[in-house]
Length: 203
Image: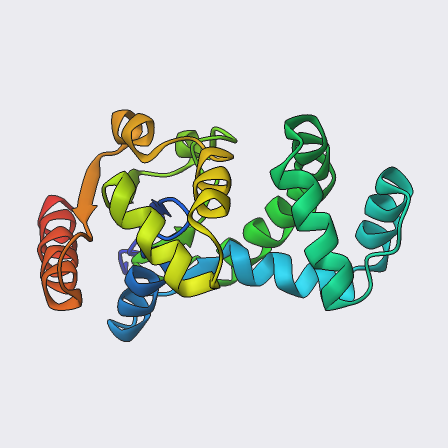
């Protein structure tokens, strides 16, 4: 009689950070290592393009169309300056995002490791659904400088956007691993290599 090999579930890694901390750089490196990444930013972008029901719900609440890039920019300005409306937008969008995350997890169920790249992982308590929380960390001043240079916005606007999110220092309390992205990409990649090696040794 042959013995059936039972495969363990994939190791789920929740990757998070803050705006301008370099989470996308880390995510791309994981992909280069052939580790699948479920990218919640990409999911949201796809929803805005293709999910008519979600857009209808958003437009119904905010009372203006959200069809063009300019409309999305207007919406962004509203939610960055109004916590209540930001939370309402999240209440509309997040269920659609979770649905797609679960769909992709099922597709990738035979993988050893899955990265779930989720900016608001801590804020929405998704850390309870992953095996490890990995935080991409930079200090506040570096975060501001990178956001100013990346988005070509004023320092005051950058600070406002950063403060609309949970601070990286608070997120540290929830992280199993902290990847310091305050120096070079090469150093960040080295930290990721060590992290992957460590969790593989734990299996």
